[in-house]
Image (cartoon, rainbow, N blue to C red):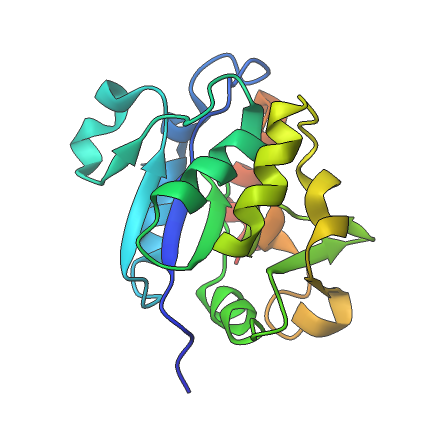
Length: 204
């Protein structure tokens, strides 16, 4: 069984203040974080892979379709909105650019959980939704736009207006028991920890 047609959108709009440099191009095990993400998602079956960024020159070498924020200055929620607006498909798998350990098996499982009665599929770790490792339908566009225009930028703020399917540890544990897929690297210390996991063979 194949998932419905979907677009993959990589959200690369963060300021990277805590890292001190653009997180997407920080190297982990000799590869940039965005390179690792692209390698792990290349065969998911997406109709297209989009890059949501306001710095197209920095990412031009990746040769991906790029889109700047449709509503500038609206943070990660604005990035998801732009991805939904620009995607060819009615469904978008949105991933942050600084997640080096995403699991293709888990992402395929997530895609299979989307049905006609669901607008969002999002994993939770200890009850907290991983909204930049989630699937969104274009049915979310209007609720998100209302949030953005009101400057309410918390991603999960629009969830009460749509139909959300949460995946908890019992749902995704067979694919990623340590929840490493949701690791995002914001600081040099987190990068160092990820490097240790990689060196010790403990990473996915």
